Length: 484
Figure 1 (cartoon, rainbow, N blue to C red):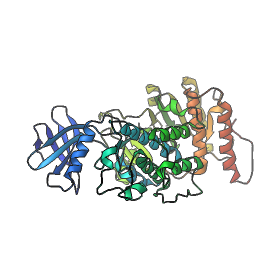
Figure 2: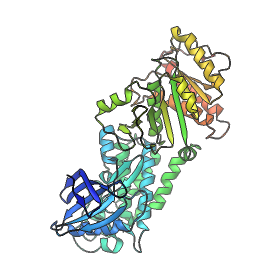
Figure 3: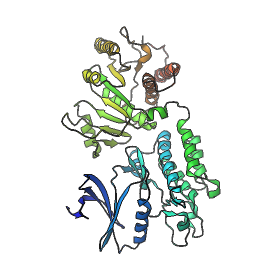
Figure 4: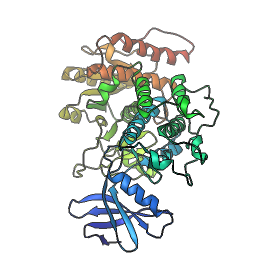
């Protein structure tokens, strides 16, 4: 299809079809930017809903709400020209990879409450969405976007007698009753249902009883949303968002500072096969699961990035990024390929065993992955000594090292910056020991970047000792740490 609509929108293809109409991908010929064009026939039974959606969206300007550029029509159709969004719905994300961590649930929940708070204050009367559900929340480079405003209405319009619609599992009890009064707390109920879905992979049922494995603080927030009586729910999206923000900040002084700062972590190995990519992928997955958005950048031509994309069957976006489970990466496309810089403050770069490339770029923190095998001892000591002499903040991870063996550190290398990596066959689904290991590694990285309060040394060392203890427990013997 190569039609040009209204003299400026070149149709490139079809993004999707549904009972309401068709959504096309188009290019604005003057600006050379992509647009999504939603076309609905005027004969459509719910055409008034479409018109209402267009009018609502046209007046809204918020990062989490798609921009409406134009509303056009011809004799047969009406057209809504919107911002083109690349991403997947939170419903598809959970369906594909399973339920999310507490931290990631809270991270996305805060964004959602901010959107709804804006929506409720956007007009002279609160605008209610009335169809909040995971399928209507698009994840675009870790930014939540709310789509499908077909049921949205002002507070007065929402309570006009007539047919009511919603999504089973997310719709509040009052939406099922023709005489039920809808207000801001109707959307609050749906937010609670979405939080429960993200955290458990299922929708809640009334009366709500949290599963015993759920985090008590998060389950209390969800419970405060999905009360049968709306008078018992959180009174506003702002109040709910403030509570989620408290949970987000609880117990960590660095989160806000890290998420507002740029950080480049470069990894390379003492030799080919040291396990650099394995450690780098695990670190990226751990950080994302803890609510730290990041991008893994492949800086060597090992072929891992392209191979994983073939295996996962995923397509790249405009930045060249791909997503598999909770891992977002940019494969090595070659020196001649120029793409827009990905929108991520935290970058994890895998240089393979190309140490020269690391120091040419000058990252914030260098992680050297050493092969801890006895036959690689001399090579590991040599490279570790060179890294320490460069003067950049560094951390050394010893991989493939038996915990019964002693690791000798060359002169100038600080033991406080050295870690033993646990065995973890799947870096995309970290086991218990690996989570503790990456937590300790992250604490050291943040301290090297000076993103956390001074005096964390004791905390880092405690975490390291916990890693050693957990792994040695499996051996049923306990030894003093033998890194020296």
